[in-house]
Amino acid sequence: MPNHLLDLSGLDQGKLEALLRTAAHFKQTRYRGTDLSGKTVALLFEKPSLRTRTTLEVATVHLGGHALYLDSRQVGLGVREPVYDVAKNLGRWVEAIAARVNKHESVIELAEHSGVPVINALSDAHHPLQALADLLTLRERFGRLEGLRLAYVGDGNNVLASLLEAAALAGVEVVVSTPEGYEPDPALLERAGARLVRDPYEAVRGAHAVYTDVWTSMGQEEEAERRRRDFAGYTVTPQLMAAAGEESIFLHCLPAHYGEEVVEEVVRGPQSKVFDQAENRLHTVKAVLAHLVGGRPWSG
Ligand code: CP
Ligand code: NVA
Image (tube, rainbow, N blue to C red; front, side, top):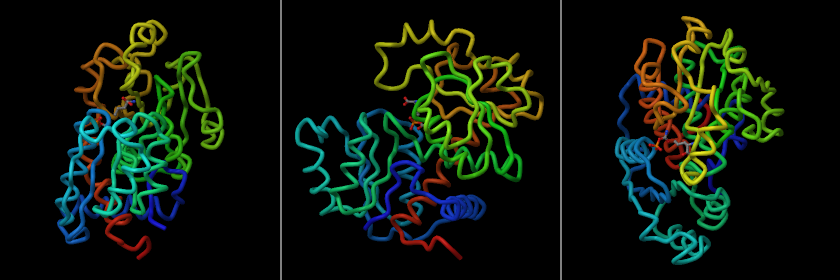
């Protein structure tokens, strides 16, 4: 049974710790290896990407493997042929699949039928690779994860879902601030022991980190107008960062929609760690590939 990373629910604390430790080691040593020697990773993307695609490709190269980008317009996942058939075909040729999909069910189906490890490179429900980089960034800044408090201000979306799962494993306390109707799955909130606070100013008070993501995710473009109205007052501004406190850092998975969930001044300001976060996407995905595809042991 191959290892998959569809969300973070399949990880335990030991595996999470191994991934973060390997990622930190890779970063520190500028690791180049042969973990994926002779192996091909198919990158099947139904949505655009800068960070996820680039870091998957670069990480695969650093590990001695080959990455094959497959444009979904050519593949026609579920359109030109069923996901089942795509999974069965790819599994005969490549050693792993990283997929960015419209519907989370598609990564589940790829995992069920391909016979090779499948990594979720973002779905409508989860973004596990992002949350791993987020944890590494937090740990670098504060030297620990346990007991940190993170305030997430904005849409209760895929990025937040993975962040909640990651935080639950790592002992990070999450305070979520969304407008009514945009809350994350209550079961996820509960599992993470996260609190919901409507007022963003109250939510960020005493937080080690303030995190936001776009109000309109890829695929929701038709709702953009309504969302801009519904999210009024939830923009991360220098005033909100000041309310969090000088020591608090700002995080965003990027890309940002400037003037909506955040203003440029915050992303380029002294509290921002967003480009460290983006850099850490490389080191963490490299760790994921080394453990899941390269067979690197989880312990030791
Ligand atoms: N944060 C992130 O996943 O960025 P991309 O959409 O550019 O991959
Ligand atoms: N929530 C965003 C994240 C992009 C990295 C989206 O799904 O479009």
